[in-house]
Length: 105
Image (cartoon, rainbow, N blue to C red; front, top):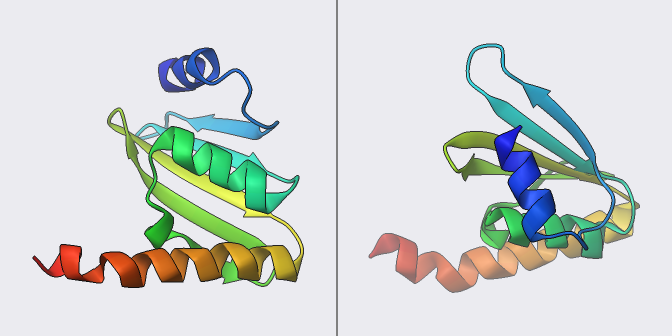
């Protein structure tokens, strides 16, 4: 809950999202955005510090990114049209390719 409160305090203009906090076992924060995946999802991803190159699409209308933020597992989900999802994942693939040499080093 502290992570979510901090994010909302530091980034008050982030697009609307739905949140789920799970404290069973390892603490986890789930953030879901349903409007304009290209802007809302990427705004939240950037605020959370999740790398663009690690975004993936488990379905045609769904995109995800996850990682640790302030020692909390965070799962970001975005829902949109197949065209929006394709644009987000294409950007993620381009970033992953561009940073591939850095990862190998």
